[in-house]
Image 1 (cartoon, one colour):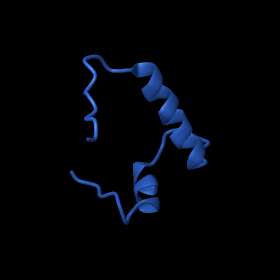
Image 2 (cartoon, rainbow, N blue to C red):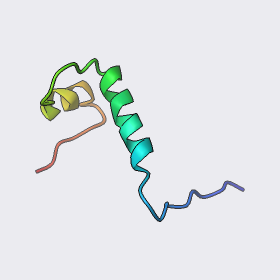
Image 3 (cartoon, rainbow, N blue to C red):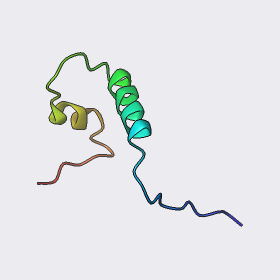
Image 4 (cartoon, rainbow, N blue to C red):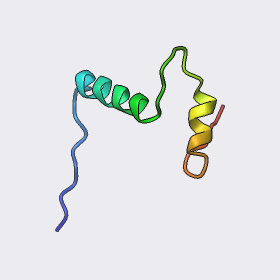
Amino acid sequence: MQRKRKIPSKPNFKRATKRAYEFLLELDVKEFPIDPFKIIKRFEDNWHLLS
Protein backbone atom coordinates (compact mmCIF):
# COMPACT_ATOMS: atom_id res chain seq x y z
CA MET A 1 0.00 0.00 0.00
CA GLN A 2 1.31 3.44 -0.95
CA ARG A 3 1.92 5.98 1.82
CA LYS A 4 0.24 9.35 1.63
CA ARG A 5 2.38 12.41 2.19
CA LYS A 6 1.35 14.68 5.02
CA ILE A 7 1.03 18.39 4.42
CA PRO A 8 3.54 20.12 6.72
CA SER A 9 2.09 22.31 9.46
CA LYS A 10 4.76 24.98 8.84
CA PRO A 11 6.28 26.19 5.56
CA ASN A 12 9.90 25.22 4.94
CA PHE A 13 11.30 28.54 3.73
CA LYS A 14 14.86 27.28 3.48
CA ARG A 15 13.82 24.41 1.19
CA ALA A 16 11.56 26.67 -0.90
CA THR A 17 14.32 29.25 -1.36
CA LYS A 18 16.85 26.58 -2.34
CA ARG A 19 14.46 25.06 -4.87
CA ALA A 20 13.61 28.48 -6.33
CA TYR A 21 17.31 29.22 -6.92
CA GLU A 22 17.79 25.78 -8.48
CA PHE A 23 14.83 26.44 -10.78
CA LEU A 24 16.26 29.80 -11.89
CA LEU A 25 19.64 28.20 -12.56
CA GLU A 26 17.98 25.46 -14.65
CA LEU A 27 16.26 28.16 -16.73
CA ASP A 28 19.50 30.16 -17.02
CA VAL A 29 17.88 33.28 -15.53
CA LYS A 30 20.64 35.82 -14.95
CA GLU A 31 18.89 39.11 -14.31
CA PHE A 32 16.01 40.57 -12.39
CA PRO A 33 13.16 41.33 -12.63
CA ILE A 34 12.06 37.97 -13.97
CA ASP A 35 9.51 37.96 -16.77
CA PRO A 36 6.99 35.23 -15.85
CA PHE A 37 5.65 35.19 -19.43
CA LYS A 38 9.01 33.97 -20.75
CA ILE A 39 9.10 31.18 -18.18
CA ILE A 40 5.56 30.09 -18.99
CA LYS A 41 6.34 30.03 -22.73
CA ARG A 42 9.08 27.47 -22.05
CA PHE A 43 6.54 25.20 -20.37
CA GLU A 44 3.47 26.03 -22.45
CA ASP A 45 2.55 22.36 -22.90
CA ASN A 46 2.12 21.93 -19.14
CA TRP A 47 1.66 25.40 -17.65
CA HIS A 48 -1.06 27.97 -18.20
CA LEU A 49 -1.36 31.55 -17.03
CA LEU A 50 -4.61 32.57 -15.37
CA SER A 51 -5.59 36.06 -14.35
